[in-house]
Image (cartoon, rainbow, N blue to C red; front, side, top):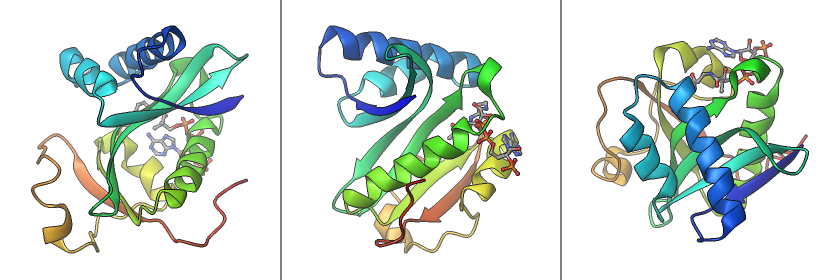
Length: 162
Ligand code: ACO
C-alpha cells in the first residue's frame, strides 16, 4: 500500500481518488451532511492523504486543512473502508500523516472527534485537554456541536515513520 497526498488539482487521477475517498467518508460518517463532505474534500484549502492499494484503490484517508501562520492543522474527516477497519490501517495512516505534517512545520493537530472515535484518537496521542493558546486557533476553525475537540502535539524531531 501507498500513502499519497491528493489535492483538487484538476487531473483525472486526483479526481477519481478524491471521489472514492469522499464516498468512504460519506458511508463511514453518516451523520455528516454529504454536501459538506463534498465541499471540503474538493475545497482548494483542504488536502487529503489517501491510503492506496494496488496502485489505484483508495481504502481510506484523512482530509485536513493546514493553517500555516498558526502552525496547526485541522483534521476534518478520517475513515477506513468498512471491511478493512481494525486491521491497523488507521494507525499507519496517522503515523504517516504526522510524519508528513511535521515537515510542514505544523506543531499541533486539532480535530472534532466523533464519540465512537475518541478511543482511536486517544491511542494516536490526542487529548481532550487543549494546550494550544485559544487565540491561536479560535476563530480559525468552526465550532461544531457534534464532536469532542481533541489535540495532538506533533514533536518537531520525533521519528513518526514506522
Ligand atoms: N473506539 C475505540 N478504539 C478504536 C476504535 C474505536 N472506534 N477504532 C479503532 N480503535 C482502536 C483499535 O482497537 C486499535 O487498538 P489497539 O492498537 O489497542 O489494537 C487502535 O484503535 C487502532 O486501530 P486501527 O486498526 O489502526 O484502526 P482502524 O484502521 O479501524 O481506523 C478509524 C480507525 C479511522 C476510526 C476507523 O475505524 C473508521 O473509519 N471508523 C469509522 C469512521 C470514523 O469513526 N472516523 C473518525 C470520525 S472523527 C473524524 O473524522 C474527525
